[in-house]
Image (cartoon, rainbow, N blue to C red):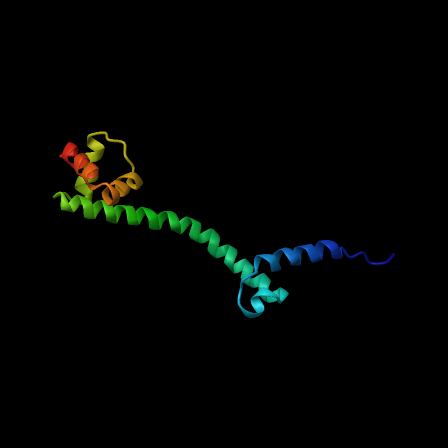
Length: 114
């Protein structure tokens, strides 16, 4: 019996990877083996950095809250401790946004927790 080869699926698989490699520089965009490696690496970076992005934003929010709290005479840890004790349920994202874009509202929160 002759050997059966599924060329249609093979071509579709390669076409999908080459489409993902569109915009890459040099042979990374059109040579199968190079493009496959580049796309695999890019997917790993994308997966890893979706997690890192969350850490980076939390760190940024903490820096912004700390800077705004220090202008009001509190450190970040003191402010967050008093905020939790007074049972104000604002998360860091909202607090950082208030500190940046609405300083008078942030000052009102600080005055309430003091």
